[in-house]
Image (tube, rainbow, N blue to C red; front, side, top):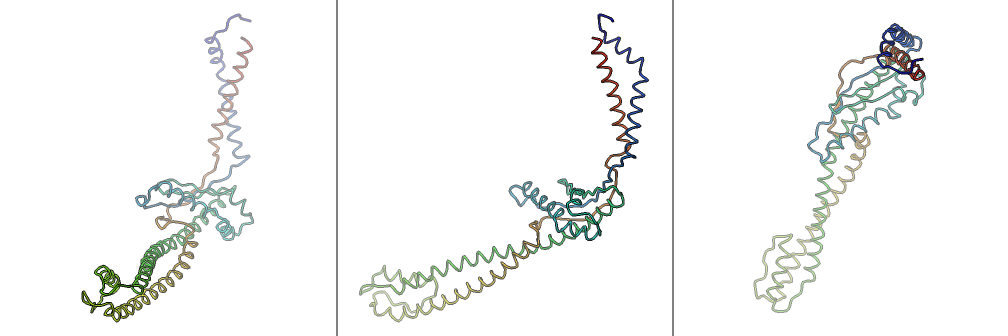
Length: 314
């Protein structure tokens, strides 16, 4: 055995036996290629779908909101009712969880979504992907239609809430004015401050007429106050009726609001869904790829054996 080891000699030794490397690559590639036929890989059917969020400018954190909406869409597409309907349409004997494991939702920010179905049978995979996409489009379109209605109802509810708040404030103030007018008292003669206070009360909710002249005795205000209280009572009745009408409308609106919210599946009215493209099928592991991997494994095997032999020589 030689006392010194030379890398140049080892490389020359390997080069002289290049045929073993070629044979290892060919053998590994043949085994990899053959395994694709002996153990066929599942087929992947890909059905394109367009789902986009078209109103980034309206939100403080548009990306977070968009991602949350896309998660809602994904949950809907893989929900139990969706899969049960898919199974019923396919007349499939598989159970829901088995089907769920064979489905994947892929999406990108540009709105390019892909519904992926895997199956050993290429025709079956394509059928599942196509039917799933049709159901997804129908359900999403329906949910987004309800989301549009919900958005309008939400705007109306906010407007009604503001109107109710305005009426409630007016009622509270009117009740205070009526109490103040009834409790109005002044010495005889009526002071300028008491007279100004009574006039200010009257102006808030009425257009008073025949206000007693400055210097008139307290008794001159009795009939005027009685008339003012009648006007304020009529205004109070009108506000009560308006409040009741708004409450009735709000109750009915709340029922419709809840109904449309549930039907919208939590989706935003700013989402858009469209069909596009054809369903494409492809094997998950192609024979060419397996042949390449097999050839690489064979080459690595020869190289490792060379390293082992070289270590023993050293």
